[in-house]
Length: 197
Ligand code: GDP
Image (cartoon, rainbow, N blue to C red; front, side, top):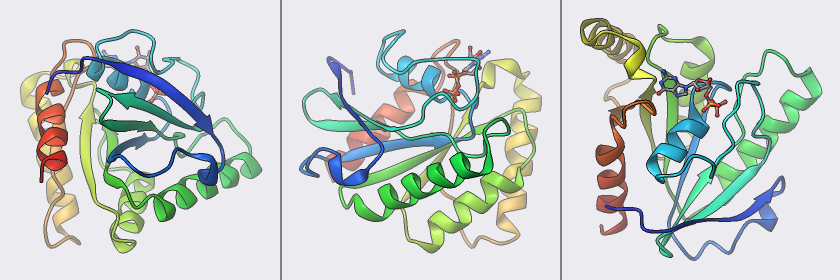
């Protein structure tokens, strides 16, 4: 799929104010600083659709973008901020849970994982609760350019091995780099394929 148009629609902290669920939508989530804004901008061929920042926890709301007038890309707040207080953390968890429970048009949640890190409890816990709630999700390993190919493959194999200790099957996995565009076609083709199912 080629992205011909990408428009910001709205920012909400309450899922009830999100656009009517008349179009399929695909949401992106991950720990703050995982490279979510950079990935969204890379997918949409822009530098500034999602605000990129080196300050963790900047995306604090549910942001809807209309893509090709036919589906929504949703930028969700990052989870697991080291630098915000407990009450803000709880507020974000509630926003995320409310969103995931309410949006029947959410076709796939992309959970972003920093390809450089070994499996993190926070990410594993988040994916486990998504699976228990029957949320369809896929994983995207980000910042792949920061690793040599051998180290990248070793990290991903280790991730798979760790997940298979408790999961009967693995979710769909993608590898991306906002630096060099890796993963862009795979992710967009996957979205197109789900949209036409
Ligand atoms: P967010 O908080 O998850 O939205 O993360 P950002 O997109 O703001 O990225 C956090 C930092 O990681 C920024 O300094 C980005 O330039 C950097 N970054 C993000 N994606 C990549 C990538 O694919 N490759 C490299 N080398 N750096 C990246």
